[in-house]
Image (cartoon, rainbow, N blue to C red; front, side, top):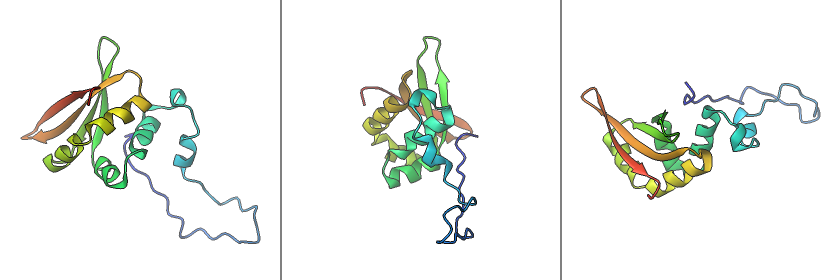
Length: 132
């Protein structure tokens, strides 16, 4: 899934400080994603970009969420954020304006977002439109 987090560990990587032509050195894929134009990014890259602009506590909450984009017949879309629990949903709802601003910087067609939580096997969502 595009939301899965991959981490690479570098502690095994030994680089000889005198040999600058070490081919084993790897960069995080993320470092390159953000050199692309938004219009060239796929959904997974856009989602990484979206999360990157939040502070670390918000990013940590977003890491526990699942995302999907629902496209509507009129050409607009809604970003659905499925929160792991009500506490996360409440905290993210206080950041509506920030979420809207980040959505606008990533997706032109997304005009609203929903904060959802699963209750008794059903997904319940609050939807917010661009006004914050």
